[in-house]
Amino acid sequence: MSKVCVALSSEEHSPGDLVRYAAMAADHGFGDVWVSDHFHPWIDRQGQSPFVWSVLGGIAHAAPGLRMGTGVTCPTVRIHPAIVAQAAATAAVMAEGRFFLGVGSGENLNEHILGDRWPAADERLEMLEESVEVIRLLWGGGNESHRGRHYTVENARLYTVPDEPPPIYVSAFGPKACSLAARIGDGLVTTSPAEELVRQYRSEGGRGPVLGGPKVCWGPDEAAARKLVAEMWPNTGLPGELAQELATPAHFEQACSLVSEDDAVGSAPCGPDPEVHAQSVEAYLEAGFDEVYVQQIGADQEPFLAFYRDEVLPRLSL
Image (tube, rainbow, N blue to C red; front, side, top):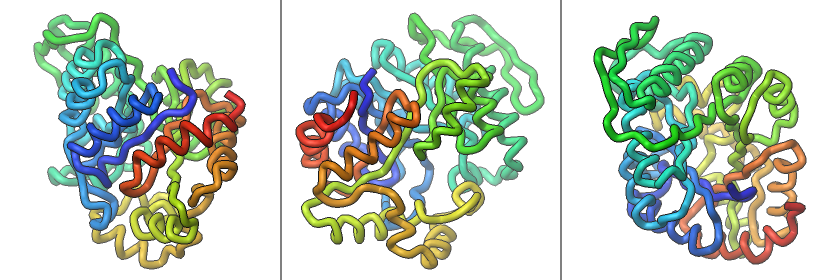
């Protein structure tokens, strides 16, 4: 596992580009990537939403040796956990064991599409816990049935399974989700360098790595990079639970009309200064994160990778 890894956005890039960027990351010496799993982008400007499992199959073929995973999949509403179990098992086989399954409780943006009720937060965590139980049950490869509060599985068997089940990393942004991650996860995923969340996870018995996912925008001009962030990812500046509750890209665009450039950028490093980018990664490492998955906003992926390899990584206390 690498300390500094690459995050690829399904909301922003086409499936072919995602595969190409993953192979490019491997060529630049990065050993790990995660790919986001969305049915919709956050806003129309982002413009993409390929099926993550097809993309992961392409990456496994194009970049053999690369460790890959989902950052993160919701296995509760839009896709039944039995189907996620099959998809993840196949990805793990194709990646020859170099696969991890990141899971989370999801967003209404993606999960409402079949007309299902969007559950309250506590129920979503309950559903996530049961879904992980179902996934692990089926990864055992036997003929299995499950009758729980939220899910039923009847005489199901996965015939294509990896020799070892992949780790399941659980996403958390608050104390309740962090407790769940510590109880059922093989690792923790979160986006901000929240030291208190890492401490809680470890104190409650959480095992395995803690993964973070900062967004950055490398570019030769800081002002242009900041403008690009505000245009492509204004949703990062939305407060509270709006990201979980708003239902459509149009709703996000309406809410984002109130987001300033400063709010959209937040603490994301923008521009060409390697010290600024290094300080952003160091904040995660100092908070106790084991792996930092950096997402470059925009199409300049290859110069970003070269910049991080040649100018940012040498400045880090790895």
